Length: 239
Image (cartoon, rainbow, N blue to C red; front, top):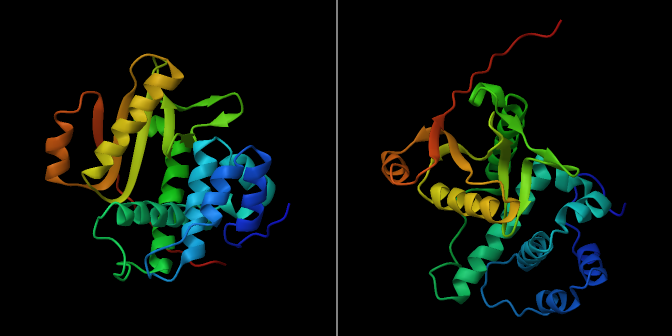
């Protein structure tokens, strides 16, 4: 392994790994990209593009296993999402959207904390899916787990199977479940139906707060359920 825990996404290894797997042209485009905005984190943007490239070709998990063990931790997941977010924002900037130049609305520290908490919530639910719905279990097949299940252009938080053998796509939101969560969920559901070919799947959005707008939107989305979670914690002294 060429990476140490806690380190950022290793660009140099990513370039070499992608080329070894037949992605030389796409890698060169990312390396030679002339970045037009002035936001001061060009390397993070390139990391985002390389992450998307590897994910789109089903190579991201292998890369993490070989070269970036930190990528499998909550910190690594936070870094992955930020990088992809930068790439998405730059694509929007190039298309003429009003992105770029403004300060980020949240600090990297608070964003990392949110992603870490969401990862803990995801892992807890994955181990206790029967509490979400009786008979619900985590998808496991061909060495793949339903946790952070990779699809084209994204990852499903939890891919589960219900008591009748049908797929259930679960999207988690740490805070308020916003309307865009529905569009993301519907894309994942469509991908599962088309690529895993097990009949029509169902979808769930699980959030701490559910907006009225989201309730209205979901009322027209067949097969989608909204669930609210409650999180409690306590503090105890250590003997």
